[in-house]
Image (tube, rainbow, N blue to C red; front, side):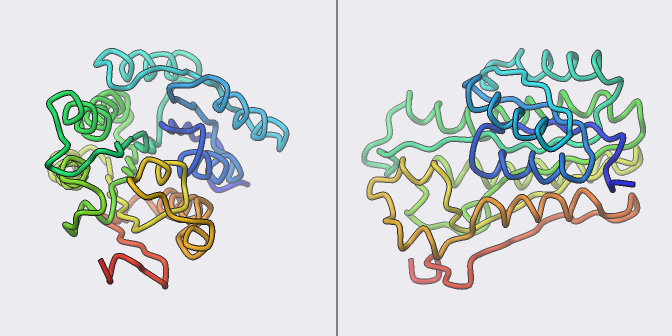
Length: 247
């Protein structure tokens, strides 16, 4: 039997990058997938790949910075499938003008809203059915910037990802009695489309040396297939050629 047969997983930011890789990995292990992101077309493409491999996926596109979107997605997932077992809390964004000298209230709000508030909305919504089940797993895409401070990611993104790590740990503090586990994943550079938002995007050779989305998909699957009595509180992962060491 597939390791995740009968499980329902909700992946945010599922249309590309880490979210896409995580969705494909979980579906390959037998999970039913609920896919959320801003743009319907990439979600549909991921769902089609899952269906072609014999899996089940539904697309619930939406803007997760809206406080209502997460609750609506969870309610629909539970209506369709009766439960929610895994949240891959992956949606996020960054901006090119990210240094302190360039930040303005609107850009600050965009980065904090897209990386921290949206993650909180999703976690809070997912915890409702998980408490009823007395079982559930939350996996949050944080960042190397959630542990180490450098100018590369920008102060707003760095602060948001530190917040995601704290959020994840606080879930474990409060919810372990309900059989709920939470993991913060802190990757260094991953070759995903978010790199295009850097002031100087890395070239193809630099991206080839980074972690690849499939590496994170495999990690998400590993976390999701640990026994219920095991909680991986935090996982930090980097490429061997980790440019973050050199600033």
